[in-house]
Length: 401
Ligand SMILES: Cc1cc2nc3c(=O)[nH]c(=O)nc-3n(C[C@H](O)[C@H](O)[C@H](O)COP(=O)(O)OP(=O)(O)OC[C@H]3O[C@@H](n4cnc5c(N)ncnc54)[C@H](O)[C@@H]3O)c2cc1C
Image (cartoon, rainbow, N blue to C red; front, side, top):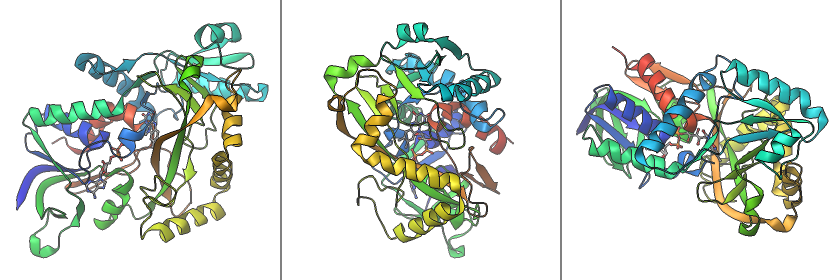
């Protein structure tokens, strides 16, 4: 039977960065088990690649505490390794004067989190993003940057294995704890039993299922949200220099459809956040499995029991209509016409934990631990940005001593 002192389930950004942090602290027998043939096939490789800058998150929350530091560490990592990094900044615009108080509240929150975001006027906005529309004021975040998430993952995976402290087993699905006959601290996996000293569950959209198999976190369940993107046609890509975002609804963990110039110059528009029927339901039917009725039931309970979820679902489902999607973009950007936007295959699933008792969306990262097992349960945005700082936090709290 294969054994490792520390077994990590999942080679997304969290599995990899926490393994890297453990290795930096001296761990030298780490085994990462990943069900896919390579890293980055789910959220970590399908996101916008934006390094956020501590603007949106409730002061004192784990998201607020790790975002800016994560941004700094990830920028330094990309610079050191020669990975693509666009330090383009971002503007948050408020085209409707009624959004002004929310914009100002966002600025106060950013300052409380230590973010150097500043309020700018229309003239200053025109210098940064000539096409962007606002009413009076906008928020400028100079520290927001864009990276190539798959390049980051590939680099960390390579660094881990070349360093000799970790090995990665691809195509190896973790099924759950093995029966008592195999001994405690043993997993059943697609490639046979694996025993561990410590187990770290970083299974992303499947993290709650694995935690439940260990008898943990039963109060929480995952609701998947699909993030669809479109693109500006290449001839119109010059319309956006960096990132243009709307003022978001602070009650939900999604930021609204926005413009992001990727590191290769394409301008992505999105993502949406529509409830999906499967943890990997990337197409209309693709990724649907036997769990779909249970996910549908969970969504129905949320629709009935949480008015905010109901409003979000209604608003987001309307974005399937190209005209509605266009209206959301056009209010942020002057001179945009429907023909400027083209379809884009990019799609991601945001696994969002909900509290099955209160029916509330869990708004912060959540880590549960039980004896030798540690479970990262709600790695919502900005977990990509935060990952290296979050890894330090997890190691300090759950792996010291
Ligand atoms: C559309 C979208 C846009 C986003 N934009 C941003 C952004 O711009 N900036 C930002 O900071 N964050 C963003 N996020 C959030 C960010 O991508 C996630 O928070 C982060 O990637 C979560 O990382 P993870 O390692 O927890 O999950 P994942 O990347 O999903 O990794 C989990 C891994 O575990 C593997 N796995 C699952 N179950 C098993 C099993 N049983 N056995 C073995 N392996 C298993 C999966 O195959 C997967 O590789 C976005 C997310 C989405 C979906």
